Amino acid sequence: MMESISERIARLKQEKGAVILAHYYAPAEVQDAADFLGDSLGLSRIAAGTKAGTIIFGGVHFMAETAAILCPDKTVLSPAPDAGCSLADSIDAATLRKWKEAHPDGIVVSYVNTTAAVKAQTDWCCTSANAVKVVGSLPEGRPILFGPDRHLGGHIMKVTGRKMELWDGVCTVHDVISPEMIRKAAGEHPDADILIHPEAACSSDAETLAADNVFFYSTAGMLRHVAGSGRKKFVIATETGTLHQLVKEHPDRTFIPLSPGLVCRDMKKVTLEKILGCLEHGDGRVIIDEETRQRAMLPIRRMLELE
Ligand code: SF4
Image (cartoon, protein in one colour):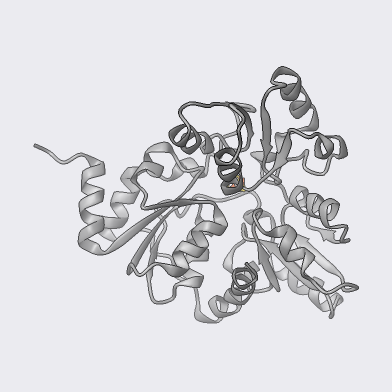
């Protein structure tokens, strides 16, 4: 009998000593083929800790780059090297360099959704899971530039009370999540918890922040919240790929996407066929020049050591 594509992937993975990492926004079948699932922070940790010689990164390209920064001794393959991200694409290293020249005591905090070149100009990396902790740990009285997500930056300013200059970038998926959408969902589902990603446009809205059934979480934080909650119903205000794991882990509960249109088209560029191409032909190898890699590793290491 002919092997299915999933069976071929499973066999080749074993033969080649490879692991597949997938983000919660990747297509459901890619999530199901993965050895490890996670959000940006979780996957960075797994990449740094795996003993496998080859990592296939089922996410957008900057994520595979982050794994390559952390794992110089491993082969990192990106199944969809053309999978961009509106945040990573909005910020550039040259402008950061100029800001640092103008602010010699300034601190650049970059969300992990950035290229290796931008990380190389960054003092601290953060993800949505640890941004509050990272910013809260910075010394007082020094200028801070936070980029590229202005909604996440605004949310952190509200929560920590720290003043920061914000880069004007957005995630085009989460940018459409307005306070009105949240209020409408809260009115329609008064018995639900509403879980919102802090990249959402509503994430610094005072009324949204004050509601007691509204919670802001990274994707992994949403999964933890549901696992520890007695509620039966949840409105999920993030990329709809997240629902795949939630439904799998909690078939007895109801999950309602805030909008079925919350889909990251770049994440969906990762397919089983492309993963097979990585395994069969070594497609999508991520190469970063060593000087950039070493400089880019420092802010990621700082972030990981803070945890
Ligand atoms: S969901 Fe937004 S932040 Fe995540 S990869 Fe897509 S565009 Fe980038």
